[in-house]
Length: 517
Image 1 (cartoon, rainbow, N blue to C red):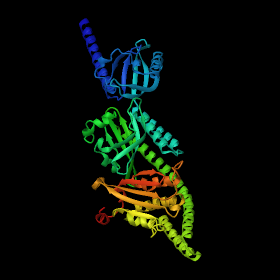
Image 2: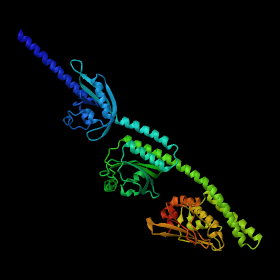
Image 3: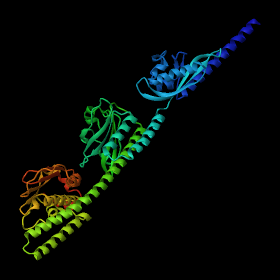
Image 4: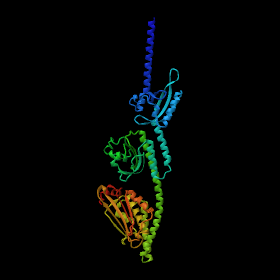
């Protein structure tokens, strides 16, 4: 009988042990299936165990590497204070809860939602602690980025300065994405280079400000021209940047995202985001960058439109003054050279009619493509006459319609100033308009010079006038030209130089085929 009872007791214990093993196996499978980082701690917060997904989430190769470590020590700064408070709450039988940023063992910063509860012993008192941490990084980043976009929209709404827009957009990008550098650059007229005037950087980063050739940094400029965002996780291995990775490396660029800003199908700017180390860019981060670039483009377009409106308003007033000045100059010159009042009246009427026709042509924008010589003579009908007031010379060069219009407006501006203050304000002054083509082929450049002589002595102006700004923003801005102004005592000298291809923009294939400068 005693033997029977002993055997029954042994079988019962084995059954209980089997149930316990099954329960532990089930618990292990549950913990392994959970995406959370689940830890068992002693009452002081030392790590006793961690589930497999938790080890992977924390970049832990083996639990032995962290066994016995104080869990609260993994939290930096204020996060450690929150962790200690959660442990204290759990030891009292409550549930401690907090959220915060903490790094994995490989230094990857993550945002965690944490709960800490007590595991009670046989006596019902807290014996150990259970800490469950859920990775909420993507949700947190999404919320922060949405808040950043909302704040950005509010900040951009009333800005009237393009540089301020660039500064705010790059700061928002840099801080929200944890970058080493963010910069917004303007693409040059050739489309092969980009210039940066403003940037945001982490302390110690080298500056990107200045002009850069795309060819020095990779082979992805065609992607940008098509309006495609360029994403490079590692400049050393990506086929678009591997051959030129030393240039980005000198600027501490390990990974990059370039978001194009397009206008009427043309690349006008790029939002450049850099990380000093290789980085796997998430789809959310790229989408956020694209949203930033679009907001920057809209803000800059609004500012440019307002500047253009103000410029037109100023230009109307300026041209009205110039018309009156030109009428006065024409009348003075006509009366000075006329023998009789009747002759003066006839000549004056003809010249005023020519002046009106010239201004109608310019204001209507009906200037077609043509040779530079024809554009000059059409723009200066009042002065290109037998008296030799103008010396016009240069090779046969065709220019596009919009360039011809801008060139005509520039010549009118120069002629008006000459009639008011310079060589055309007296009877003896003359003006030479000369152009020449330097070099040949794709690198050819055209230089046009306006040189006055025989007028009153010239002194440099105390400040840059509106007319000068019109010239710089007009033809020079259209062809990407370099402007030179000088004021020797003998007379005002103006020169503009730009790629020949920029002057010829807008020509048809047939016109280009017959243009041999």
